[in-house]
Length: 138
Image 1 (cartoon, rainbow, N blue to C red):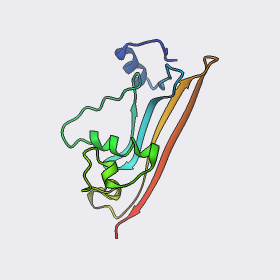
Image 2: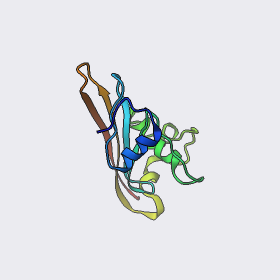
Image 3: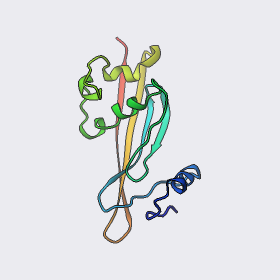
Image 4: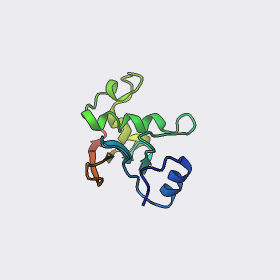
């Protein structure tokens, strides 16, 4: 099992590659993983946090901003307005465009995030929140 006191990024990456799940390091809830299913160009994608952070790398247009648009803060407040979703405050792309990407006419998508914390007795407590989105073209 992963050691919560291990602070080495290389060892943390190896644990992820070995299929181990992340464990919390603090008494306060921290983000451990988030995922997208059927959203934008992500058929099924899981992102693992390291020390309560998430690094997204890729070329322009790869979907880094999209990951943030459809996970945080949407999962915490469920506000679907385009202005709220876009990190730049634009109203150009409503949420339905995240599902009906590339000419799709109907789609169901999911976004989720897992949080965890260390309890007073040293055990782990986890909570996962998620949203299902369904849309059709008009």
